[in-house]
Length: 80
Length: 80
Picture 1 (tube, rainbow over the protein chains, first blue to last red):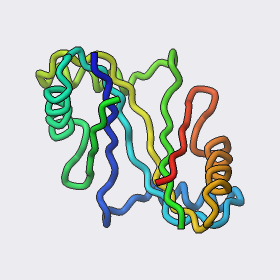
Picture 2 (cartoon, rainbow over the protein chains, first blue to last red):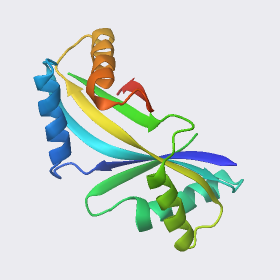
Picture 3 (cartoon, one colour):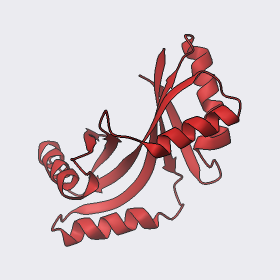
Picture 4 (tube, rainbow over the protein chains, first blue to last red):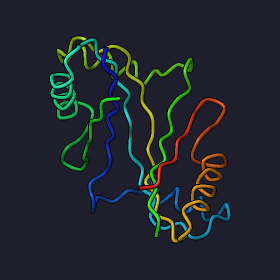
């Protein structure tokens, strides 16, 4: 069995209101010196496949089709 | 300036209906051999502080207070 972690983040230049809200909340809680905050998603997958190369390819296909919106998001796949 | 990535994931044993939905959707799309899927969050932070050790400590405090719900979530901090 192969375990993988997919990280999906907003592309540079795409507005992130959620990140901005967190930035503001951290400031209100007294955390000074916080610059930009951007929020993304992470998916932990378990695949029954045994071939790492093939698994990575399959996960990329999953990202393109479902996990990431490639118009505004980047993704990275990492086998654990 | 210090950049850090915080990854927040559900603890083992905590139900993840969103992950289950993704599992189902991947199956419907024809991706066989997908076992468990669990979704988490990732935060990319920029801190103006220059001391990595102090920054890490401050980020842990942010996680405890705002970024993670430590009753049901684990977090990990990684300086980039």
